[in-house]
Amino acid sequence: MSAPADTGTAVLRAAALRIRRHIVGMCAGATGGHLGGSLSIADILAALYFRVLRVDPAAPDDEDRDVFLLSKGHGAVALYAALAVRGFFPEDELAGFAAPGGRLMAHPVRAVPGVELPTGSLGHGLALGLGFACAARLSGGPRRVYVLLGDGELQEGACWESAMAAAALRADRLTAIVDRNGLQLTGPTERIVPLEPLADKWRAFGWEVREVDGHDLEALPPALLAGPSVPGRPVAVIASTVKGRGLPYAAGRVESHYARLSERALARAYRALDRPGQEPT
Amino acid sequence: MIAARQAYRDHLVARMALDSRLACLDSDTGLFTGVDFGADAARYLNLGIAEHTLIGVAAGMAAAGWTPFVTTMAAFAASRALEAVKIDVAYNALPVRIAATHAGVAAGSLGPTHHELADLAVMRALPNMTVVVPGDAAAVPVLLDQLRAVPGPVYLRLGRGPTPPLPASAPAPELGRLQPLRGGRRAVLVATGPLPVLAALRAAELLAAARVDAGVLQAHTLKPFDTATLLEWTADAELVVAVEEHWRTGGLGSAVAETLAENAPAPLLRVGWPDAFVAEVGGQEHLLDRAGVSGAAIAAAVSARLDGTEL
Image 1 (tube, each protein chain N blue to C red):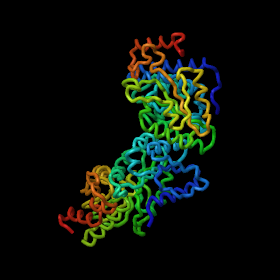
Image 2: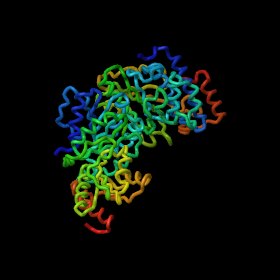
Image 3: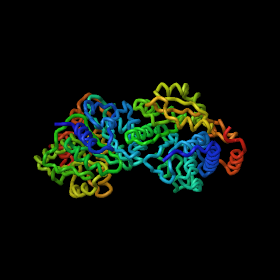
């Protein structure tokens, strides 16, 4: 099993757009959805699923596959969209998001092909990823493990407990990605419980840190693909992102956190996403 | 006399040499200090004082096809790390084995921060969880061998210090089945945990001396709970007694109450820690004695309920 070939940023851009279109579509359903924080990770997921992760939709349980965990489980609509676009299940099923009796719950569930473990209660993903990484080291094989965290999620103490343990266990198969969109439910992280200096924090916890534009589809793949420069170090990729990215009227606004889009708003969103030059800058 | 947790440690280390998919995850408990894992040393991971991470790492390893045994104190497994147990382990039905030491009041004078009197309530409420309480050190390897067939998570409740062995006449424990330790039908005592079981046996002796026919069942498996054996044994009982080292709410007493109430209601006496935190210094036996978990106190309570008289 190998990572997808480097087909260039055009393919990633097309995948990211498709993921965003599905995100807004799901957020126009009966329950609405976590719009802003899903749009902020769309490019990261496109880079992961179309360039970085060694996964095979035809063999989702392959023993050597790379593992991705969405620790910020409220970004489920983005994950479902990425998995469907990548071919883990039909894109048609996304129309059933949050429908009674269905499997597409508002936080990721294992019943959905490609979802490794359920997440949603914040602060769990890094320990789970560390477990996969420890197992992979003991088993041998090429597996790498990626955990995508929200920046607000880092206010959960368990993240730092696991970060400390990962460095102690020299878990260099583990990469944490921080969706640094700067906003949590009620406002800016820096006004609620500040995280800065965030890169220094990860470094102090024994991680190798890379800072990248989380919407730059040329910069994301190399930042995610490269192992640590020093053996034994886990890698933290701090991805600067914009909450609500792709919808100019929602981007960077705390109100984008959760939305139920009307039919009219959905049409407006599709128009915004499809506008040439909108994705990415 | 050895402690159940020592028996657990020795059995795990021996099993690791035979099964290359077992891992030992520790939270700096000290239980494995001095243990020579030999060629299996890489499969011993000390996560430090980080119980949430301990359980999460175990879940990740289990999802990758491993069988991790995690060791921590019951107070931390069932309280501090409970969300990880619930979401990461139980929800996913992963084969994580949680060895929880110092359960009940085994931590004695360390106090309520280190006591765990709610773990049976919490763990048996979780879907997919198997809950096992070995009655003595000898039962630990027997039950652990049977637990190999369990595909989901297991909560293994262990104490701290050595406890006396159960009578040699006791049949071998069988996972998921109540274990008859003494015949008798007028009063039926159901007990879990080494010291409560011994207290129940002592109470039955005292009751027999007073011509009260009392039987004893050991509940080494709280979940799944052996409804059939309980109903069979208690069909003609004038009084059923649950004896445990646990708050009276939610544990064995509740399991027995639920089973009886739904099938064949019978008078029930619940013996355990009252609805309060321990408020005095004391070792395990002292504290159990204060809670009425002793042969004499149980016999007196049973006699009073049956005849309205004191022994």
